[in-house]
Image (cartoon, rainbow over all chains, first blue to last red; front, side):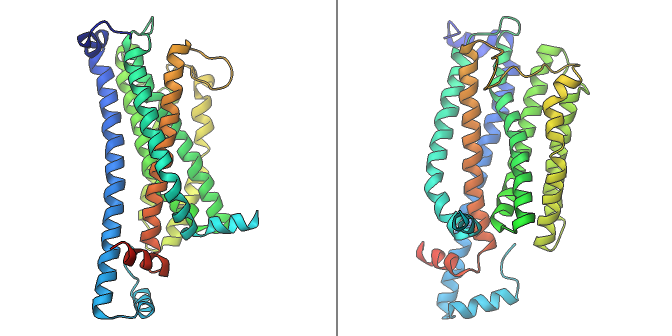
Amino acid sequence: MAFDSFNEFIAMGGHAPYVWAAWAATAALLVAIVLHARAERRQLLRNLQRRARREQRLGVDQDEATKVSHQSGGNSS
Amino acid sequence: MWSFINKLRSPKWFYAISERLLPWFWVAAAALILVGSVWGLAFAPADYQQGNSFRIIYVHVPAAFLAQSIFVSMAVCGLVYMVWKIKVADMVAAMMAPLGAAMTFISLFSGAVWGVPTWGTWWMWDARLTSMLILFFLYLGVIALRGAFSSRDSASRAASVLAMVGVINIPIIKYSVDWWYTLHQPATFTVTGRVGMPMEMWVPLLIMVLGFYSFFIAVTLMRTRSEILRRESNKRWVRDLAGGER
């Protein structure tokens, strides 16, 4: 342990603003990247499931639906 | 060998294999970054000149490594896409660009914050700092270029070309500290050769670097899986997947 007490650890020998600003910015960005990746995946799966349900409800034949959505460009945003 | 390369072409195969690999990279990233952070922040000894401000190195160096590695990976993917028309390579490249930009930002920001107590300035037009800023703009350029075409194929080709041309900047970043030694110090962290710092400082840094690389691989695999679902949403296997996961 390089510090004698928790307060000394927080103070970082007078360099607290620099050390904690750099670390906090890094941590925040890494967390944001993970949350974004997770939200993106959930959104995509939701959309795919919604479409599968809709097509089933309409009784659309899957291959027929493929052809139609290809013509209209699909939802390949 | 050829059957392996043919498999790599298939988004479906990539989707299946990445599902198995992904948990390992997440666990490795979390464990390594956690251990490296505690070690680097609380247990590594203070630097005899810089005191505790040197602890910024544990986020600055891994981010700077990734910033450059991701750009090289993107250029390689661009080459693979241009030569062999492998779609997965383009999807991987597309997902890597924002992550690379984020890592470049972290290295620039943490470097600027570190510069205040160490150099007395947060910015100077030093060769290393300038070439990293150029890297950041190259990332933004690649991202913007992908959004600038209505045809996906044109966008992919343009982004691939920019990545392949922009990769020239990487050796410039690497050797900038030797060619124009103005402000930024030459490399102190090396895996091979003479280690420029005590072992108690170097080991946690190595752990952080490995943790950041695992994080990069995990995020890229996960987002490429999403991109596959997005681009292949009309394929039979993706539709079956959606039906099955209800």
